[in-house]
Every structure is written in structure tokens, then in C-alpha cells.
Image (tube, rainbow, N blue to C red):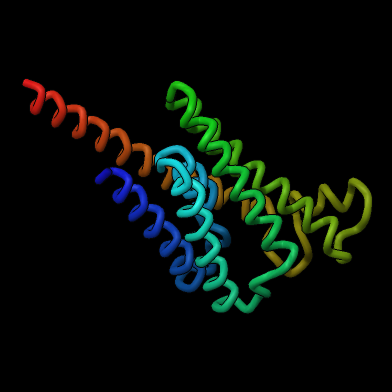
Length: 190
């Protein structure tokens, strides 16, 4: 049970990092481990907590970010993002029910981040009249984005790097905790 608290604390700290980074390091747009939080919550937390904690923490951090950065807290873009977060938690839940492997973990982490990027940018293309209609507009939403903003591929690159860093950190914590628990059970059984 102590491991569950440790994972919950890590998820809380990562969401706090997400908010602090936005305020303190705006030159790193979207360096935010959203997919890592969602996937690891789904993978490492039990039962309903696997859904409630990562989704709830990311929801609250989105509300704080909306206040800090001045964008609407509720809107179609946020609902698309939260739907993607739910999907990535679901990927983590599916991964938790299969035999674990490091390649599967990183494939799911990269895949979850890519899903988030493609779906949210496609939704932006559909919902934002500033994007041209047609495949050219979709390509624009997935690469350069709108004038006056950093290219959207930079957002994906930063999200991917942060997901890989923090996902690796959570995986390492999980591995160490499993080893410690295994050694404790060996000691008690001896």
C-alpha cells in the first residue's frame, strides 16, 4: 500500500511541476508530462484510483493553468484534452493487465503522447476557423500551427521529452519499490 502512496505523491508532484513550469519557464512550451502522469496512473495505481487520481490531478492543474495563462477553463479544447487523458489512462490500465515489459511501457508512453498530440491538434484544426479547411490545414495544425505561436511540433517534442524523462523516473521508482517489497517479503518469509 505504501507504493500506492508513493505513486500518488509522484503524480501530484508532476502536476505541480506542470503548473510551475508554465509560470517559470514559458520558453519551454508544453514541457509537461501529461501522458506520463496518465499512463503511469493507469498502470501503477489500483482500481478506480487509477482513473480518479491522474485525471483529477490533471483536471485541477488545467484549471490553475487556465487562471495563470488566461485561457478558458472549460471549452471544447479542454474536453478533447481530458478525453485524451482518459484514453491514455485506459492504455495504462490495459498495460497493467498484461505481462509488463520495458519496451511495452515506452511504446505505450510514446503512443499515448502521440495520440494526445494528433487528436488535440486535429480538434484545433476542426474547431479553429483560423486554420484552412482541407488536408493543408490539418498538416498546418500538426506542424507549423498558427502564425504568432511556436510551431506545434515543438509542443509535441517538448511533451515527448518530458514524458520520457518523467515516465522513466516513475518506472525507476516502481522498479525500486518492487525490489524493496520483494526483499522484505523474502526476509519475513525466512
